[in-house]
Length: 211
Image 1 (cartoon, rainbow, N blue to C red):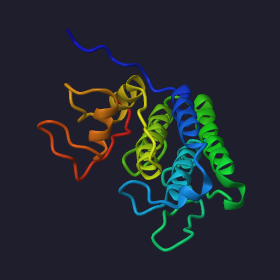
Image 2 (tube, rainbow, N blue to C red):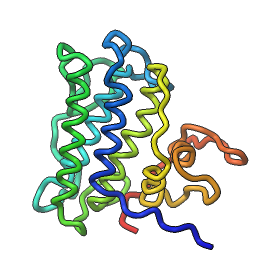
Image 3 (cartoon, helix red, strand yellow):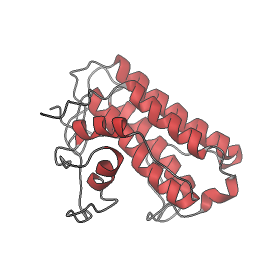
């Protein structure tokens, strides 16, 4: 019997991923956020800013009446050599509460714009033009996968719900394995783990074009 389709990615999925991140990481003391985030060269603070940045950017790609044919002309920058390039930065003086507020705000921007954008409208992404559902799925991937980087850096468990991951896999990863589902499958698709009989991917890329 064929596996039932897990359903579309919705604005509520963006909110669920962001809420999970805030609930998991929001209570970590400020001094621990300068630790390296997993295998990345960024700190945990910078990685959380990157999540917020992606959420904001994906909303920005959908935010004009005429979808852009290239990247929106935001002014990108970095705060240190080797740090992530971005648009969104959190004020360190606001502490972890402020950092989480920035992540929540950017998640709300994306989910709100996905709710109101023309469902069939296609906006530019370097991996291929995508629709609002695709950009919502991208925002969830950034939150969940970089959430693992935060969890490894902060020493916290991170286990997003399999049902949410299955919706992301169905929307963005046509090469997802048929015999492994949920969070472990998403981690393999994103090059974070190996699976039995499947080595860890050294190159990976989602497909945001509408199915």
